[in-house]
Amino acid sequence: MVIAELARHRPTGVPALHHLPWGEHLCQFYRSRADLLDSLVPFFATGLEHGERCIWVTSEPLRAVDARAALRAVVPDLAAREARGQIEILDHDAWYLRGGELIAVDSINSPNGTLW
Image 1 (tube, rainbow, N blue to C red):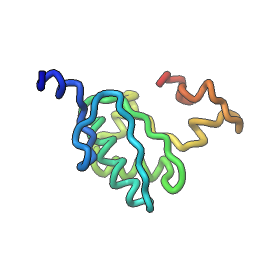
Image 2: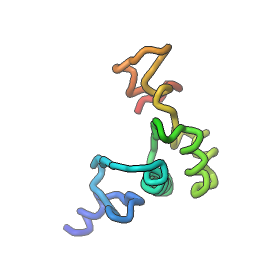
Image 3: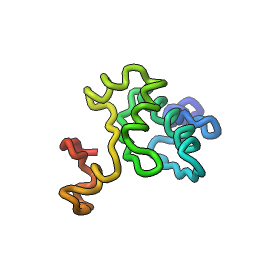
């Protein structure tokens, strides 16, 4: 039973959490951009390493270009993973706003047409 239970858990990359059941959600409070990066970069790197499909929708204080640069520092083949659709890194406005308007129904679809 222990082996079956562990099989349903995924590594998080977050040292304090280690593994969580599939589908579990996290909430993080942070004080600075550095705090945010310290948690999210290992989280996404671990997901990519384990073959997960990832989406990172950013907002201030962290823009997509900065998130991508930080993740690239620990995932050298990030560009290839993006090209094959394993991960998308988007700014908040690119995800939630289409033509300058909030489109709630479409927010589960990436701007490039991928259904998440």
